[in-house]
Length: 568
Image (cartoon, rainbow, N blue to C red):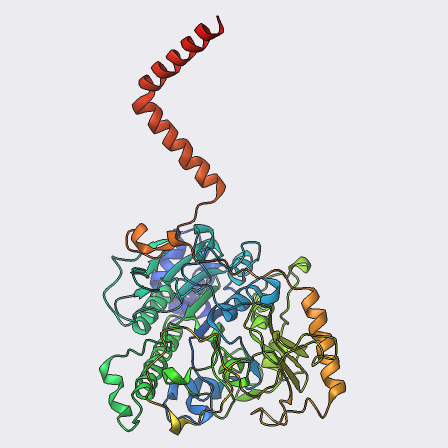
């Protein structure tokens, strides 16, 4: 017994017990072979998983009273912090650009509409992105899903903008199974990428929600959570149109009479299941205890495609609350006040400084961010540093017929589309967009629109300026612009100040070279910069010289002789 005790005493100095380093024997043996690298202290930087969902309406989650069942989202939100005063932009590209840069649209030139597949346009290259800053801070950065920030040249692609890997689509929408997208007659192509090349070999015809989730789980499985912090940006295609979903998810919604709403509900349920599988993977592979999960939609729901923003006014592509007030929550063991609601203002631009700071990165003063670090407001319930939100100023959107400088007290032309939130107050000018309240039981059976949104909205109210107290009237039913002219004037002056900082709008015309038929049937970069064009021209000239050099030399020699003869 004494001998055994003595040996145990000696071994305690030679071999640390397994539980003290949280390693399996295989990891222990690997550490010995690798010079003890495994004994470096685990990363203190949190893993960040940002889930961006497409076109999910404000009401389309269980905890907002929906008939759509989302038990997994409900549980994650209930155990985390629900963002109940959270705003995004009314369309896809604008929200994504502000997430990636922390800057308003007026400061990137993307203040009008979306980035279309046929436009030579993308998120301006001079803007530093969220994954670039996290990469500087030591993160491994990965993107899965929908990009929709332009791809006309290679420098615009996700792997050129800070992501180590990318698997997903470049366009705004497409078929969930075939991954094909048409932008018009004769303008159809394949849209699934692995890195910077078409992912033909990885394509198994899977439903995109399932495919993207499997890819995300694969990334988690192949990364060591104890060695390096991970940033995973998972941007689902769901629940954007076209309305497609595996049949088994439709069974539970037989009672919904409207076919669009029924399919949409099934798509949300499939998405809910996908988030559950992702959460299980985070736990299984050892990430969960040191992970911050952010869940957000990119804009309001589209009633024509089954979405519901009830009881909010308006829909996707509008600046009414139904277009910009979002479903969002943060789930993490690192939160101080779990199971709470954040009622202070939070905007999608805030994620840039919040996540960079949380990840131990640095913010450059010359970045001129419009976002704020709101982590303490979310995690601890402290007041938000954000007091206002510029929803947008779009100088080229269709002008309001009844707008004028006079209606704007000589300060602002109310024909211009703009929206601003300051404290409790919200001001809208111009054409805010489709303005009805759409109760869930009144879904129409009209055909789906084939466009992302309808820019030519007909507003027959004869107005061009509105003022609401959003805290007291979140459904925007009582216009107070006539009652509080002094508030209107103050907010118009604020719009003028913002507009002075705006850069010119980037919205180029369609480029026919974008047609996938010129790119092997794939949507992808088509534009060449000056250096690429010079290099290509030089290669062509070299090829021409090699094949036809003798003939050219003979012609040149003959021309020289004729010239000399003429001179004589």
